Length: 480
Ligand code: 4AD
Ligand code: MG
Image 1 (cartoon, rainbow, N blue to C red):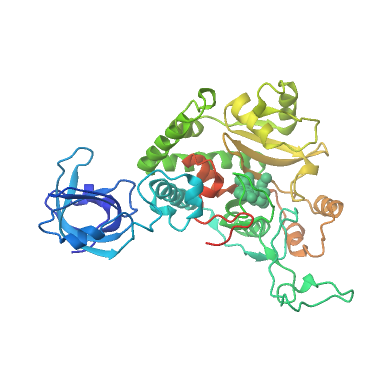
Image 2 (image 1 turned 180 degrees about the horizontal axis):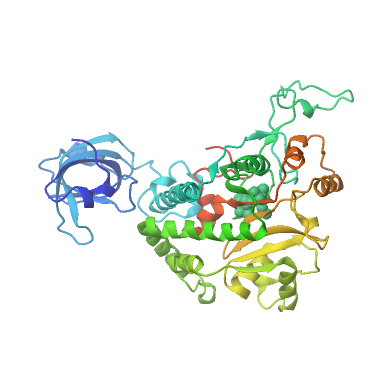
């Protein structure tokens, strides 16, 4: 008979059904009368119990059913004798598809630290924690498409290889077709990077936004969802060199429409996970509770994971300007807690993550949409406000995460945009294609970028961004 997934047994395969399971052994307990094998096939967090009678299953086969081995088991669904599960499988035959030498298999059934599991990222998806994280990640990715499709947005695939640096921060990875041993030289003798990519300079994209703007000024409402790359050498729990970003871009939206969409979108994603990932979120919540027990009482979180998610989904985000935020930070007493040692600050300074965390976690205790930043600390494409000092920027700050979304209303006025680019030394001639949108049929438009891994972190409660992407790319880490 055909293989069934463990997830479907309860609903589709009642007591008495003959089924075949395939999956990996998590644990095996044996006495001389019977063996209990906990099998997991990744379709659901719970293992399924296989009961093997040594009179039916040969001893040499049972011996090979060790932790990590892959099995094909056929048998009958029967009512479970033990507590904790409704049914179990009485094995009629077991085939060992792949053995896992207990002397060598690194994932023996005991608690492993996340640090250790990071070193065996090629196997860690076989643990409960990572199974849960990647099922939730999948659900959120699916919900992104569901959300925008329902709203009539079009999914645009923007290029990975590009000559532009959308954020203008110079943090790009070069793409090269150069013969490293014998590169083309300029007349002065240095390597001619202008010829990097088939005689053209190119890098990996830091954002699909600029191409997204081109699309929005044709299709009205679009979004991108793809990998982006940043060559910043930051070793934090919030930064990756390769991360996935969702970037909606909308013609005819002003800054407020943009914030409304972002808030609605984030809440939709959270609600989607709450509805569709209950078992995994429950597991992750318990995991966090366990972790909290080892912390001093005053550092433990007041809310469980799911209550925290519900709270964010049900309450309005706070909306304040950068200028108001600076006032709050200046008024608040520094050094109250070591955690928030302010260096703030005068108007104009960029907010450090400790400032963001103070606003979100101590002051408002809610997600915050911060708007209208000084133009000096934001990108060239943001729309200048009437005051001449600020731009229509928007960052959304989340508890435990900090910045989760960055966006803005875009500068649609040709003269102002060109002036700003010249001030910043961004070559307007190389960006002629971008400026064409302002030259021909320009219109107010807005957009934002959601860092997908930061969203997965928030929903799963995982503390380190390396633990929400299957194969994290961080400085010096690219093996598998
Ligand atoms: O604020 P950022 O740099 O904004 C942009 O790239 C704009 N082009 C977006 C837009 O308006 N279309 O990045 C957006 C988000 C951040 O808020 C953060 O969540 C995430 O991307 N992000 C990172 N996530 C992981 N690792 C990194 N190194 C990240 N850098 C940014
Ligand atoms: Mg940002």
